[in-house]
Length: 239
Picture 1 (cartoon, rainbow, N blue to C red):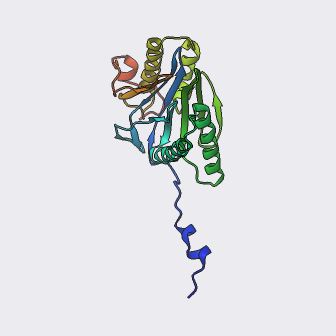
Picture 2: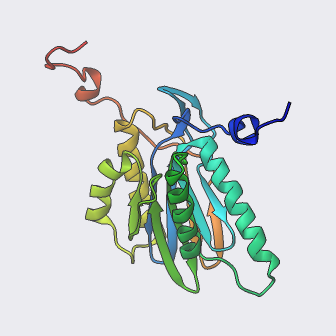
Picture 3: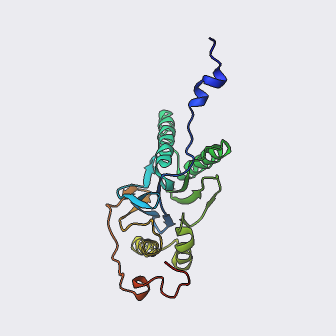
């Protein structure tokens, strides 16, 4: 019997990520005097369960860029495979030039928009930052392909809880120490208010000299406030 390609061929074996399974929460990024910093915790949530606690969600790309991701972890791994192939292809030209953060960001906007149009989106919000030729760059792109550049970026709940703090206190000329303290302040707010956040984070730094990613560490917390002891007190119809 003749096999009909359209019915029994490879196209029928294609699978799509219909909804996120293991997800990471907010990623924060900001420019400071010497470069760009990014912060993310290391939690991977399986639904509402904090299943994984060693997920690195900020990765170096090439010589000049960092990429951080909220959302589906396996889709982020797929994006990193795309970027590894892109960097390898670029290096094969051996022309003493390399892709910078702006090029990486533009590439990712096309990838995300292309997958969205195929109704097979990559379920991530991405932050891209870096330094090339003395110029700092920071941008973001959503799973729909919506993208923009800014001096500070936050994804997920961070877009609601951390951005107001960043707008009030951030400066492009702030020192490395002050920038780290500001990111830690924002991450602490997210830890208190975002149920998917965990107290284990990494801060990544990229400058003209290269990339440094900190060892995982925890923030000092205080849970003795009365609001934490009985959070539903006075709420109507509360459990």
